[in-house]
Length: 240
Image 1 (tube, one colour):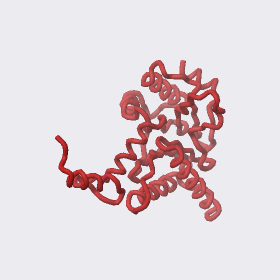
Image 2 (image 1 turned 120 degrees about the vertical axis):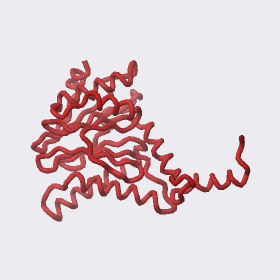
Image 3 (image 1 turned 30 degrees about the vertical axis):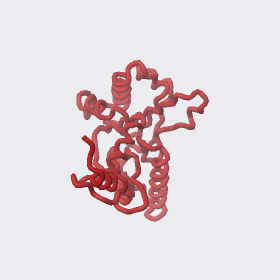
Image 4 (image 1 turned 45 degrees about the vertical axis):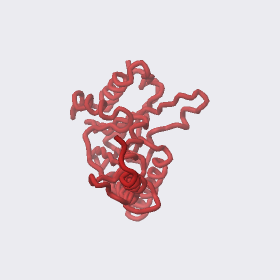
């Protein structure tokens, strides 16, 4: 049954602005932005016994694209990496803001920034864009992994500007299915290599016939703070 015209106009008002709550207590534009992140390619992050890991689906389907130009995992600082799911151009803005923040911290305090300070700043920026008029929310889930001294940490920030620390998590397409598999298979004593294999096994199970190990990248940070990129050959071995 169609809504009366006056009710349609009222609903459209809530629908078109990010600064007004609906009668149900939600901000509809934020909900739409969250749906946009579900179309983004997936990433899995894990805290492991010997470091912290992110495995990401680059989802490159066009043979004309140079693969190395389509990285999905970004270096924020020498001890912090990040991945994002959703609107890639939105993610780029947040990644650059995180990189600047990390460098400003080094110049000001002559020390490496704590990963939580980075994700908190990103979450604050996201929150601002759910509150002020004339702008739309960032359509991005943001995953950040790093070392806080010798302690590996993993954070995820959602569209509304909340963030939490995780042992393991997934963002992007099929994230709920992937998280269910992580709850079953993740163990706190996993090494980075075993974690990478678990992540690729989950991707293989979820994607089925579409799975192709060449479309994935994996980056981890060791407990002594070194960023290591897993080469294509190793990824293929993990995926067997």
